[in-house]
Length: 82
Image (tube, rainbow, N blue to C red; front, side):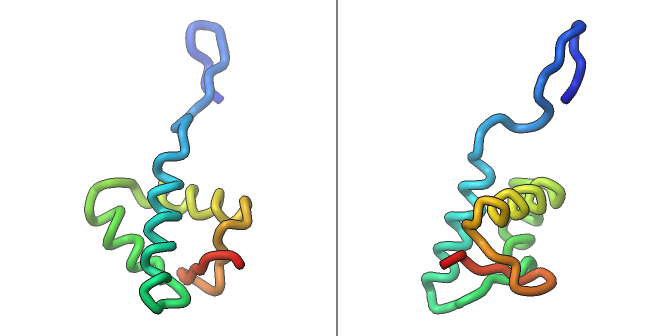
């Protein structure tokens, strides 16, 4: 939370657009025969493409994990939750 003009405001993005983009990308990639996706693939798509920052990608991956939409299999390896 941030204080602005004597009142609290939420910090960060208020919609789930980035989270949904990441989930859709993982879903599309794993539909093509891959069972898991490496963080390197997400990095190439979103970070190196200047669509999101690395902290944004990580925070949205964490949100997706907490919502049981994806599972972290190992270091830098994810898959859709069953």
